[in-house]
Length: 397
Image (cartoon, rainbow, N blue to C red; front, side, top):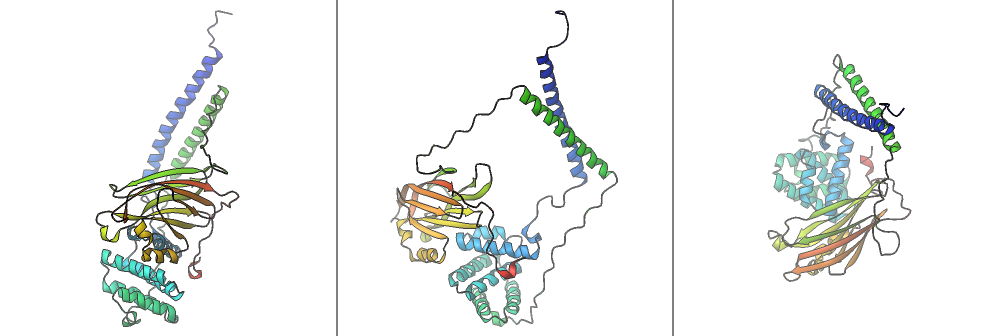
């Protein structure tokens, strides 16, 4: 039957494949249109996203505590302002005063002083009024009335803000319990809403079936495996790093803040590593002269940030920086010279760094050029489960 008009099996397979592909594209277009109509008729509750202020009181306290703890490590006032911008002034003053008093009572005077300095900077930048400060201090005075150590720490905090805690009578500003944010009532389903939902679910089911058919046909038509990604060339001892990075700073850059995530071979997030400007030369701040960089590591498994300071020769002998490093167990400092090697290590992640180039200017005061290379390793046998934060008992849920 050489004269038959029956098409060949290959042409049938090809037609079926392209038919399924076209159907999949049309289904995506129709499905996207239906989803758009449904979202327009039933807008989400938080179309622009939620804010920290909308959390429950316990989680708001956790957020404020984490923000203050982050400042004690990185000393970045602008970051604190951005993170606390949705809170009112009284809430911010109350949080700063509480933690200043807690640290002062526990003997961590440097941490308490750092929080006091942060409060002064925020007051000057945001224009806190004496009435707002007095309200927050009065509420804390009532809370710490039975704890003399904390009350003394609160007095020091109030003095830093040009206000004496004892001069604000507790009766004038009674502490008022903040009302928890109430979630808006669920919108009532409009007539016909279930019909739209059923239509969308049906379209999704059809798309899944079409995708499954297309995948089966592709495999049967001889889909080829993708070539494996080339392995990282590693000449050192032990397993190769999961990530390598080299950063270059030059004095003509106004900012420098680079970071990247650390993941397992399976794509699981383990932490984050980065390098950023730590501080400028005090007398050369306006000129952008940088004397210290942070090489930091955030380890998800113990929810802690570890930092190593790369310093110029002048900064390395600065007593102020030496005191700051001594007061923070998660902070280390090294002299940045060509060939200097250092390690930043967490519970599951280890970062081995090396200064490739270090060109300093002035009287060894600031960096004109700095090149740093980082090799990131995940420790063998490390427990990659998420750790628990060290939260005071009064704030635990």
